[in-house]
Length: 459
Ligand code: SF4
Image 1 (tube, protein in one colour):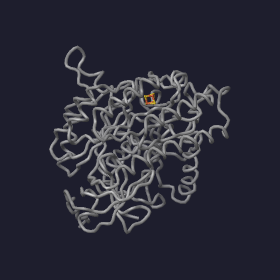
Image 2 (cartoon, rainbow, N blue to C red; image 1 turned 90 degrees about the vertical axis):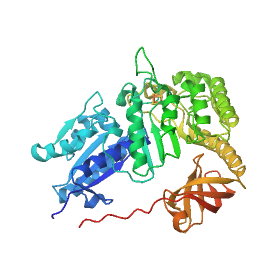
Image 3 (cartoon, protein in one colour; image 1 turned 135 degrees about the vertical axis):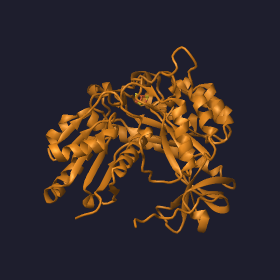
Image 4 (cartoon, rainbow, N blue to C red; image 1 turned 60 degrees about the vertical axis):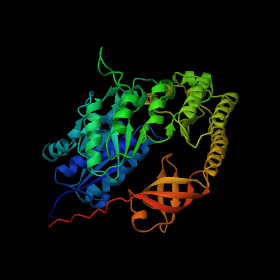
């Protein structure tokens, strides 16, 4: 078959990985390749792996098993594995799956096209580096969405949470220069992007490693600088660490019109003993005090969180403390996880203290009830209010309706046609109904219509 080679990128894991995948897609497109949504039709399949989520290895090797039979039928197919699991497992991947052509790590994704070329000439290639070569944001991207973009502000993490593999696979914290970030946001705005999400493992410690001895930018300064970029209507960020949430950040969130009223503040546990065993660096009281300061400083703030249930050694009384903190925090939503060991982390070695699966499942159910109760109450409070919604596209459950996000990052479903239904448009919706995970509403008007994108076809 002639024509450009086709690539397919499958992403596992977090937003940081999705962002990296956009960069991998951009790099391959810059080489003249075209994307396909069908892995069976691809000439190159890239699996961008994650070792943070549960059963990451099983998922990866399951996919590689399927690709093995595809490659047996089409020997020209190239398979590349990148991301955290590749950084961690290295040559283990090629020894378990010798049909993999390229393994690259989290620090050298810019090298992916060159490695694929090399593998075509020389056979399987493994290249993992320890230091980052370029920030993902500094590489060309092929964004899935025209109006929204992620911008890396920092990579790595200097903390040592005992359940987390990030420090060992992403390395120490390195902040990107403010000027480079602002320049990227300006370029995105000129390209029609109106919403940016600033990405880092611990955004609140942004700048700590910059400007030694002189002016040292803080995360709050960065928020103000990005807010000043013309054309950007919404700025989001993820994730801050509760121990580093400073009053300056709260003030910047309150004062910058484009910074959304949404704070994702990972709690992880409500027991001080468990928090200490996790190396989180705060107590439940300190967490709630920071949260209260944020709510007092930022009107109409939505707060979301991450909570791990059944960390090794967690007793019933300690879990009850988590329930109490979740009640007191009144979350808008929460990502709740049952603890699962990540090989290579300190918590994975606490096998004697693992909580029985049935106990963990019961705790998860009780925590979900608490979170859903507060989410529903907070959502019901919004009924009757007009909300600014950024349209995402047809609703996944009911394609006759449209879905979008409020500034508080709440999913809203409503009926719309024309410009009001176009992804990237900003509309006003009056909220008429609420559930724990979404809102329903009636379209009021269009605030700013997204431009029509005319598909480009090759001559
Ligand atoms: S702050 Fe903790 S959980 Fe977050 S990336 Fe760093 S080590 Fe992992």
